[in-house]
Length: 326
Image (cartoon, rainbow, N blue to C red; front, top):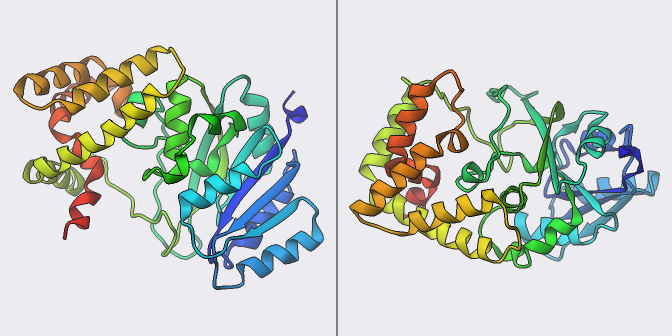
């Protein structure tokens, strides 16, 4: 039974005084309470830590910790997760609001899987533009390898998942992507078709970004094509760098799954250059198109078009490297 599972909630904070109380209240009001709420502050300069001390005085579940200086999101989360005493860890951001049944639904759903996620619905109380994709996310490893398909703030994980990321704290990629990549490699993810988290959007949030127009004919699509055409060399270098790291990680894992085999094949294809390698990648992407993209099943032509262009355009996910070089 889900109610028999012991869960540690792990939250990391940094200058979160504006919305922290609402999030803490939503955790303390869960129908299935955690055994502890570990909150590790990363050198806030506002009243965040004072709020944590205030709540800790009211509830013995809350265990506040304060870093000496600023360690960054990855280091802070991995260090905080290692403090957890329970065998299950629920990851938590400082500014969202949990559905009252979040932990109960996930505890009942995770079964023998290593990671459980669910829907996260964005909202704003300050006029920040939001959009919501109602589609069930594609969390096959071939998609996850390019970008995280699931939101870390929805995760319930088995603590043993951390054992497969011994150097996760020092990896340049975000903690939630690392966790879902390993879980996807083990084919050990379950998704709850319910809203678990109300995901606050506002100017200044760590993950703040404007909604993207995904229509076939749109400014976003035109930007996608022009960026991949004019910056192909730089973007493909970023792809090779990423997949070299992915291949190293995959080779360290003990799993013998079909997902692992397919992702390793894709990683090797991405590391080779030249026309022949390009053609092999394109053939692979066409064959694996339903595992790679978010396009709806009723648009098979779009799937084919994206697959045919993907060997050229997959670097678009890493266009941030272009800004870093300016």
